[in-house]
Amino acid sequence: MRAAKPDMRVAVIEFPGSNCQEETRRALEAAGVGADIVRWNEDPARLAAYGGFVLPAGFSYQDRVRAGALAAKDTVMDVVSEAAGEGRPVLGICNGCQILLEAGLVPGLHPGRVEMALAPNVREGGRAFYCRWVFVRHTAAPGRCLLAEDYGEGEVWPVPIAHAEGRFTTETAGLVDELVRNDQIVFRYSDAGGDVRSTPDVNPNGSVEDIAGLCNPGGNVLALMPHPERAAWLRQVPEADLSPWAERRARAAGDAPAMDEEGPGRRLFRAFLGGMG
Image (cartoon, rainbow, N blue to C red):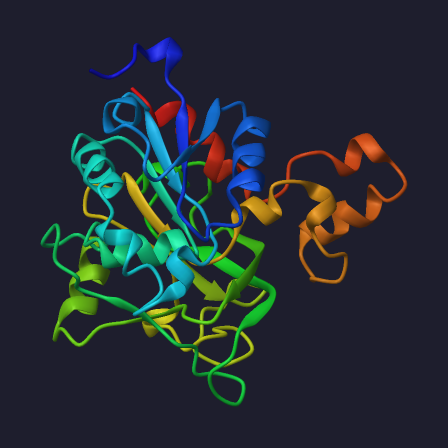
């Protein structure tokens, strides 16, 4: 039985090899969302009581076979899948994004079927681990994705990436066209001005359709490769990223309370408050 609404909290699921669970929990709490770090082998009955779920970044099971492939088979994902089917919000960040695709929850046109992969990066001279700040643009319609509902139509925001297998791809003919028709591409890589293009300086890994974040058909499950938990505070934003966020960060220099104000990624976590009905 699910907990009553006033007691609802978000479970940040720690798999063997997860390494961003603590900063993810802190980002949720900074957004006013109660959160617990819960291990992958916790009693399913306890897990089922949570109002939402986050699969954090890291290297679950050492990325053996493929990134996210083994974690996607864990029993805990049965609980997450059932919760997603009930409309509860689920966010997968980087390795969590990989797990959601391997579990068939995203894109979710045929739930449970693996329809897309997050393949090795192919930019900047070949396979590599990329760790830098990028820009993403909200390209879905307002309200299409529950966890992105606080982002304006076409809004561009800076966020860091840190992955070696982040290239959204598929071998299924017509799948990407269907995702476009369904408006499931929530965030695309862009430049600071919002220009979405497939050049290496903008789309760092060669992702098809410049996809950075993809939701399920119901809009309550978001698979996101960049790291919003690393952009949840203003102090985390680099001053030289050519965005209004950088200007705000520069003005806050030397003012500790101002530096602790909200960063561009925090709204994803705050959206859980409205989604745990």
